[in-house]
Image (cartoon, rainbow, N blue to C red):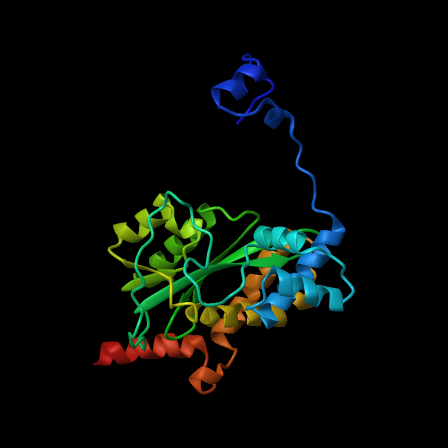
Amino acid sequence: MIDSTHKLPVVQQVRLLSLARSTAYYQPRPIPVEDLQLMRRIDALHLEHPFAGARMLRDLLRQDGYFVGRKHVGTLMGLMGIEALYRRPNTSRRHPKHSVYPYLLRNRVIDQPNQVWAMDITYIPMTRGFVYLAAIIDWATRRVLAHRVSISMDTGFCIDAIEEAIAKYGTPAIFNTDQGSQFTSGDFIAVLSREGIAISMDGKGCWRDNVFVERLWKSVKYEEVYLHAYDSVSAAREGIARYLAFYNSQRPHSVHQGRTPDQMYFGMQQLQLAA
């Protein structure tokens, strides 16, 4: 955005952009190794105890020999994009100027493919650094329809994932997310509105639905991510893509009596066509 080689002085460039002058000279610092280790452990503890907030996580970390304050734990949780999972309104940070949509899944029977899709984002640790994984899941069959790995929690990689899912599988009747700023942004909402998809967002009294996606994250992390210390973003993308292909086509699910998400998704579609 700021070009030091431009004929316009840097001072005038930052003034035109309404930025502080120091912004032009800021050099991002890498996250300390100690914090990356803490984040890796916080991630594992969050999977096991999703109800734990910064205070409880601090105490659990101290049991493991990590002596860290509650505020620092909270800062790292914010960087990772995780919060304690318990019943309360607005369970995910949303942009104050973005619109929030009502929750449409209460007391609804969801038993058909493409009836409801859900999307969420999770933190993925690497050997040095981390990335974020966004995935779109068919609610009834648990099939992962599309995913993206990104180095930042922006809206763009979420839009890329939903565009791919729509191109491959059509559109769902309802698309459900939390109230995160990525999902309430105008660009993201525009894609759903363009396709005539009903928009549903988790809110007060709907916290248990997050557990459904947490099960996917737990499988991805314990069966793939934690077993492979990714040394690059490309390695993370390749490993996660390989695992999700296995998850869809080969991994049996107890909720489906041992059948795979692929068998459920495509099998139920064939039954719908036959009917």
